[in-house]
Image (cartoon, rainbow, N blue to C red; front, side, top):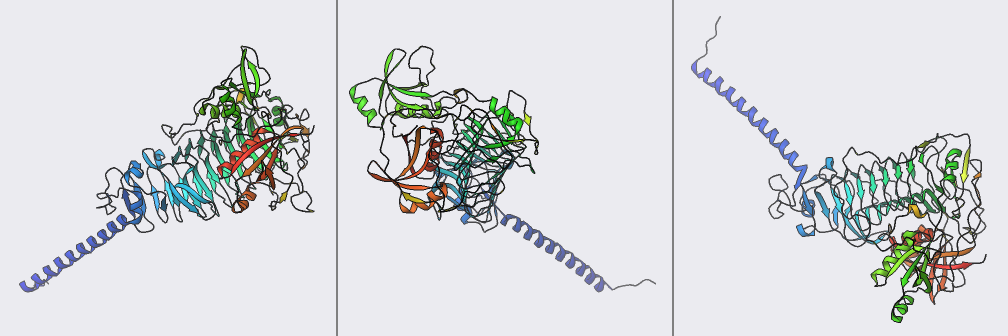
Length: 640
């Protein structure tokens, strides 16, 4: 049976069908428009070359010109997508950039090559006072695929305080202080970044921070990684090469080092000072760190009071160990054979007019007559390393003096190598970050020795026969009245103890050149650290004297035993802090074990350390200077 509809019914059915079709199309269009709108709102585009802040809406077609304006013109949670170009004051940026609840993204594949954020500005930290930063990182932030440089004095690239951002696949190049500074209760993740040419530190982890520092490359900087305060970072899988020092661990910090490659650093691979310690491999968990080609030492333990360090299950190429370091017996045996001969260095100034001699004395230097290659000179300093001598040479040269550095104790002869001031070797702007697939540098020469986590014999090695033990000249007093001495374990470091402040008799200023523990000349390039050391001239001592060498050979011990280092006689090096107010005292107590009030040259000062090695005293001076203190080194004679 066939149903027939009237023309009117048919027309109505067709109309309804068409209406429903149009309604469906319109609904789909609305849904699509909403999706497009949501995608646009989640991404804000910034283009330093083609953008215009006055007409921008954040779309691809109308991008912002500056990151500063893009932050103000976008809601929380968006991603700021940067185009190639340089974002600086010249393009309208206002520094420091305050970045919070947003993501900053450039090109992760190239680690930000061609996408540069350059500049800095004043930031008042609630805990570290006034700072200079390119970007102050707030909460809920990720930064990926950009290059960051702060060319200003004491400039830091990122300032991260009590927040936990993700910082990945970036380049931190040529900042005049730190690439990244992390402080407060921060658990930041810093991964797969490239650090180069940052003058003071590549990255600093301070205060109570617990960051993960993973798979980064650090090269051509002062301290690649500086761990201070009570920070407990995990430092995993990084390549640390061609820096002045690799990883410097100080304060009361306790980092964990695993699977890092630490090679070719000009002074030391790892330095542990003050009351710090580190987990570099235990009997239950191998360190798997690779050491090789580091100038003075792969691991240099200058804790005070001396705390033994355990470094088991690592890989070594010609190992060098200084201070109390516990490693496998075969590693210690190799370290004992790899000791290089010591040599000191004199700094000489050509004899000139009487006015020039008076100018030298005006720098707190007490010159004495010396002869070199048959010509008269004024000897103004004696140093344990060529780098330290070169530093004074550079300072004197900038003041118009004709200064050179020569090996100590050999004032005559024609075959002596001399060192003239050279420009800093650190590059301010390396051409390109390495490719993402770059592999860690491998040390050359002798084959590696790999130690298993559990060795049949464990040896605590003291300073090598030609290197004095890095312990205070004076016997350390108790850190708190009546408290017994507690031996620190690598897995459980000593509990923090409040620093003491107690008055002592004033230090009498001495006069004459400085002498220090010699450092292997063959592994210390000329002028390698001149750009990195703080410009502090030392108050001279009465006469140069060498430190007493440690007893020959390592001392065998069980894993729980340590060896007491003997105090040296001769010259000591006091580190004093001047021009310090009461507001600075709390920060100072975080950095050093003991603070002693003294008078020096009629002015109140704070003594913060006494060292047998000039290099280690210089390192503390540098550390304190980096933290904003005015520190000086004062050589004094010790009774023999």
